[in-house]
Length: 272
Image (cartoon, rainbow, N blue to C red; front, side):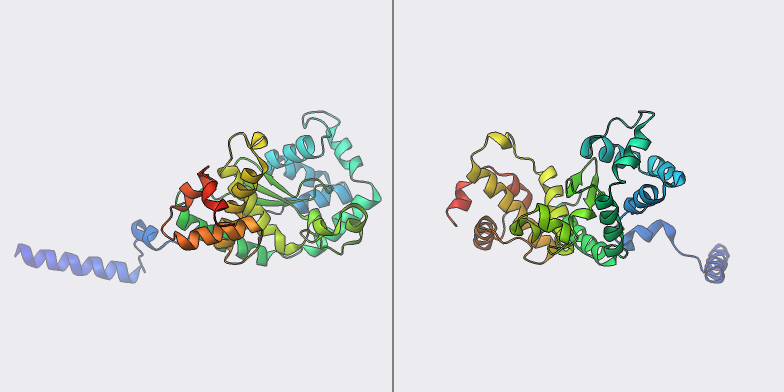
């Protein structure tokens, strides 16, 4: 009799699950997809404020992106402190220059759609997670930085100054940058540059400024090699990257994280 009751209860539970289209939420994590990356469009709020003086855009910048706004105003543009009562006016006035207004317009036009960059970042960090299971997936955002730094690494953030990636033939670049530098100021360089700088922040070289140039070049070469690996393309192709690639082909079982951090540069020099 007791066994009969258990069978009835089991059948009732099955019917309830089917009728309610019940899903086992507790086990969803077994099939969950990796965290998706979508670039935050801080640049759009910035553009809105700097071209139309829209105060609501400024308020949203300060509310949703307080750290990014502070970094831009204080550290990059060096306009003053964000808590200065006059800083908003100073910030707005700074960008009223006709050249900067053109830069804002051109940057927003070229980067109206960034789906391709989102896809590239997602592939890169999916591959990185296989090497660094506990790596922090950063918040990635775009800004317009008045031709200052290209990539800004913050506290679990990557800032991309799209005004530095308008193409090697962009007229304004021809006035201020040599041809060798202009070749890297393209859309295709955004993700490689961002990944490279982010990995450099993870694998910081002790006493970098005091190290011999060859050691600094090799350290950077190893990081660039890793960038190529996770991007699945040859974004970087220096002699130090090539030497690293030769070494890794000869030592395929090398622990990548330890290898990048290792300061025995002689193993790479032997493959140059």
